[in-house]
Structures are given as structure tokens and as C-alpha cells.
Length: 218
Image (cartoon, rainbow, N blue to C red; front, side, top):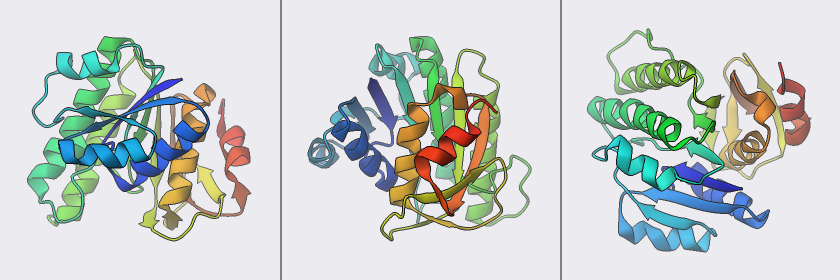
């Protein structure tokens, strides 16, 4: 498969690129800064320079041409203000979905967050983040040209992955190593029967491949 990942230099994306490249997939990661390219090459991915905050749908669609799947793993990141939650976590996610639809790339996986909700109350930056994520998710769910799956991990950890998760429509709050989020994404990309599902993900007791198979087709 050829898989294009938005936010290619993110912590989850770099892990995902390594996993996909190791299993023989062709991987491209969209990055904003050229100096990030070496990290992607080291992970086995092709760096693609494109700023999703300023690019047009046509530009992004050109990068998606010929792909079998697209993964949105971009984020404004910690330290960014509410304005960039709007332009990246919401705006770039919408742009990437539109571009995938235009390029005819049906399989579309989104990294969201537990608690994402367009009606989430509050004035803190994290509240703005959950609203932006929720609005983006709602938009993607309305794209009839995409076979989308939305993954909503709990609080992210840098601990080593365990390979054991809880993956359900609703898990409640919890934590999850980034290693395990990447491993679940790799399975989801390869499991189109999860299309149309919004799934929450936290650490649990079920092996990742079993957890993904158990929700597929639901």
C-alpha cells in the first residue's frame, strides 16, 4: 500500500511510519519544515513538504494522488494557542479530508482525541482543542467519498507500548502509550471494515490485532 500521513513529523506519525515501512508499505509524510525530512527518511518514509495551514485543496490532493490510504495525524501541539487549534486541528483536518476526496483516496483514518466535541464548553486552550477536534471529526463523518475511521486516544504517554488495549465506541478516560496508538493505526489502515466507526482507545488487556478485528464491521 501507499499511505500518506499528514503531520508526518509528529510523535505518533514517526512511530507509524516506522511500522508501515517495516511491513513493506510505501509511506509519505507531509511536513512543514524541510529540516524535518531526515527524521522521516530514518523512519523509512518519504518527506513531502507542504504547509497544511496555507496550502490549497488542489496542492494537497496532488500529494495524495495514487495513495491507497490517508492518515491525519497533524496537530498544533502543546504550547500553541487557541488560534492554531482552529487552523491545524480543525482547518488542516478538513482540508486533508477534502483533498483525499478530490484525489479519490477513500480510506481515511483520523487521529482525534477522547472528549472531542464541537459543543465542548470552556475557554481554556484545551477546551478550544477539543472543540476543534470535534468539529473536524463531524466534518469528516459527513464526507460520503471517504471510508473514514476516527480514532480517539486517551491521554498520551511516552512509555513503551504493551500491545494490549481497549478499543471501543466508548471506553471512558484513560491513558495509552504513543507506541500503541501507532500500532492500532497501522491495523486500522489495513482494516477497511472499520470504516464508519468512531473509536476510543486506552490501555487495556486485549491484543491490538484482536481488538481491531472485534470492532471491524460493527
